[in-house]
Length: 74
Image 1 (tube, helix red, strand yellow):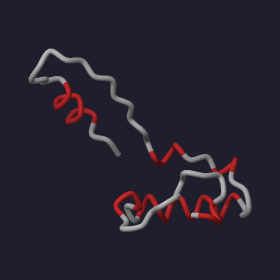
Image 2 (cartoon, one colour):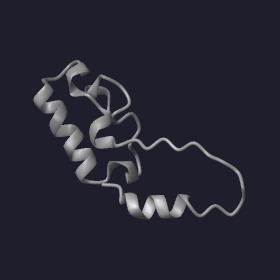
Image 3 (cartoon, helix red, strand yellow):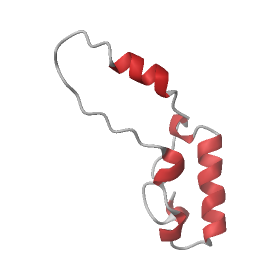
Image 4 (cartoon, helix red, strand yellow):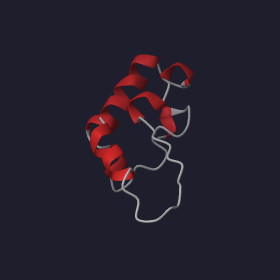
């Protein structure tokens, strides 16, 4: 979960007059198991929950997770 108060505070104190566009990706909602192929949707949701709950983005090897619609290839 993103702490929007902390994020906005950090972004709203620029050190220069540059502007930047920021896109926040909420990984819990970004992958849609309805489009997954090769496994039942229920199993896809379990894999996504495993990845999210164990901080998969910080795994040593997380290649392909939630990047394709083929969870069997993750």
